[in-house]
Every structure is written in structure tokens, then in C-alpha cells.
Amino acid sequence: MSKRQSYQGSGNREKAKRQGGGAGQGRTGSRRPDGAGRGQSVRSDSPAKGASAGIRLQLGQLVEFEVKRMGINGEGIGYADRQVVFVPDALPGELVAAEIVKVEQKHAVGRLVKILKKSPSRVQPPCPVYAECGGCTLQHMSYEAQLEMKRELVRESLARYAGLRQAPVERTVGMRDPWGYRNKAQLPIVEHRGEVVVGLFQAGSHQIVDVSGCAVQHPLTNRIVQEVRDIARELGISLYQEKVHKGELRTVVARVGFETGECQLTLVTRTRELSHRQELVKRIVERVPEITSIMQNVNPARTSLIFGDETIPLWGAASISERLGDVHFSLSPRAFFQLNPEQTPKLYNLVAEAAELTGNEVVVDAYCGVGTIGLWLAPQAKEVHGMDIVPEAIADAKRNAEKSGVDNARFVVGAAEKILVEWMKKGLRPDVVVVDPPRTGLHQDLIQALLKTAPKRIVYVSCNPSTLGKDCGQLLKNYEVKKVTPVDMFPQTAHVESCAVLVRKEK
Image: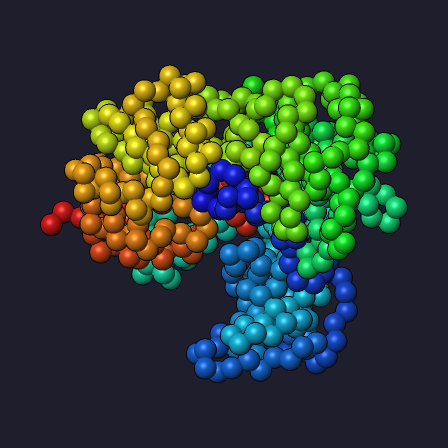
């Protein structure tokens, strides 16, 4: 989804969120470098001279090569037999042996078999199910190396797609403690081998891995998930079976307000009926007294989307409150909110710094969602205008503005590429435009509208280095990239957010 398109079932982005890893997002082959491979070993560290050379590697072939760099998904990249090979779990500088498990037109994928020369950045993953889970991809890499790797991803993308060989990319803004940072757990609950399990699907399969004690989740979300799992087992609640599309309880969603301490549990069900509803709620409240809201969301469809359209209050408040600085937010079950509350103010402060507001500027917040960035900037701006295609998100943005005492921000429903052009025709000339698009980047019409509107500054908040590079490449026609700062919103994963400031060229 748009990072600010706030509701799953309406195109939301939290299919990964990455927001920082998610169900089924793993890698090919085993993580463990202790197996034995098949076939003849080939050693080559030279890149192919051109894409037309064609793939010569064969399935099952064992190759040895040095890993040169990291890929966008956290895999190691090197060259064997003059061909590009992606190897999950391999680190730059390592000499590895890998078995070829997939051959594509321009690259191959290898399974790490053995590390012949280890990187000094390699560490022992602390998670006991890291090899099976697939939710994190970089626990085998030291945190200092993760931060540098993410900076390199941003720098390489700007060089490749925007032609910026000397891009002004700052050091990645990291965390003091890169664990326990996620404020939301969103996990399927299934019966697996006679046991009730809440977890993630193993990479490339529908086998569930129990991650109810996940090290990157807030401890209270883990506890809520564990208690729901145990109570569902005690009461014999019917669990969803994907293959036959039967059963009731599908997904457990737990969210914690880091600043307020309020907690919300959402039970996603296939049917409106929920067995033992009253006793289920009673036991949850008894065992987790910190919970302030229990909701049921009904999703009857055969779909990979988590949420359906109907949400029913079961106990307590219909939403929970959270704060970012002086801005107050009301979060309903489907409302999008950044998953890392410690890093979010750092990211938004970078946006404010890049905007260089003096109190006289008109700011446009494209892809505004529930108004997080726009409301953060409003005290330093003359006025803020936000838009989003999700009506519920705009309704939340208006409520959040009222709760925060912000009276110089207005939010409307509509696509940024259309609304900005309409406002421009009516005489609105923004001084600063903040864009925070989905992983697919800016809509082409919005890029053209920005070039035509020509605001003094564009602040681009990106969750995908590749699309950031591509979009900047087009905006360079009228703009100069002054600074790009990566922010580590999702430690232990390959995801990286960036704040880029583009300044209009003087003619």
C-alpha cells in the first residue's frame, strides 16, 4: 500500500511493511552453511561481460566464489562462471560454496553450502527459528554492518538509476537497541501436527513456524499472542483451514502503544460467528489486563489480505491512542501506523529538517494516510494540505488533527497526481511537497505534476531504494538531490527507509 494508505483490504502496504519482513518472506534453500552439495565445483570471481553472454550454470552445480555485495533483499551477490549468482545468507567478502538451485535468464540463485572464508561481520543469529522463519533476513550480520549495507543499497540505487555516482548519502540512522521494536504482531493461527500454532509461514511453503516469542516484537505483543494461542486451544475454537476454506479464527493481531501503554487485540475470523466468544474475551482480559480494546474483524474471502471490511467491537474501546511527540493518534484495528515508534520521530525530524520551514510555507503532504507527517510539520508551516485515496484514512487524519489541536491542516480524499493538478489550476502553489509513496514509487502523473508545479523543495520519504533512484532520475530535470539519509526502521531485515531532499534548480 501507500505507506499512508491505512487500511488492508483497501490496498494497504502492510503486506510485507514493511514494513520490515513478514509471513513467507524468506529465502531460497537452507540458511545453514553446513550441508554438502552436488556436482562439479567451479571457481570464478569475474562478472559477465554482458547480459547476452547467457547463463551457463546448471541446476545442482556446486560453485565457489567471493561475495561482492548485498542485494536489495539481503542476499549475497557474486559471480560464478562469469554469471551473477544470488546466495541468501552469504555476506560480502566471504568465499562461499553454493549449490545452484534456480537458473534465470540473467542470473542464478544458489543455496549456501559452506563458508570457506568467513566475514568478520558474521554473527550467530539469536533467534532459535531464524533458519526456518523467513521474517528476518539479516540476523547473521552484525548491526554495524547492517547499517552500512543499507547505506550502500541507497547509494547503489541512486548511482544505477539516477546516474548519481557521488550521491550525498549520509550514514544510516540506527537504533540503540535493535530488538523488540515492533509495536504490532499480525500472525495466522492454525492447527499444525495437533498443536495450535501462531507464527509465520516458512519460506516457499505453507508450513507454519511458531514465532510467538519473536525477538523483534515488543514483549507485550508476544505475550498477547501466546495467551490467545493457549486460550484458543483450551476452548477448542475452530481454526481457519486455508485449503478447504473452513473454520473460524484466522489471524491474531496485537498492537501496543509505546507511549500510552494501551493495547489492542483484533481477532480476524472467516465468519461473523465466533465460538465461545464471551468466555474467550473473559479469559483474555483476565490474563492480559493491559489490554484496553478487543475487536473482531470479519474476512470471509479466500485471500491473502489480512483484514475484511467489517469490524465488530467485542470489549473495551474501539481504538487505542498513541503519541509521537506532541501529535496524538487514534488507531483503529486497520489503521496504518509506523511499526517502529523509536525510529519514527527520527525519520519525521529529518523530514522537518529537509523542509526548512519558517512558518510561511504552504506544504502538500501526498500519500498522507492518517496525517502523521503533515501533522508533524503543521506547527512550523503556514498551512498543510494532505490527500490520500482511502476515505477512512482521511477521516482518521481529520480526527488526529483535532485531537492534536492542529487547525492549519486540511485533508481530502483523492489521488495525489490528480488532486495536486486540480489545486494548481485553482492557484495553489506549494512551497514544499512531501511524498511518501508505496514501494512502487511515485505515479508517473505525479512526477509530471511536480515538474510542472515546481515547488521549491520536494522531500521524498522512500521505503524502496530502487524506486527512489528511478524517481529521482526523472526529477533531476528540474531538481538537485541535496542529501539522502537512510533510516533503519526495521533492524534485522534488508528493508531501509530514506529521507531525500530535492531542491529546485535556479534557472
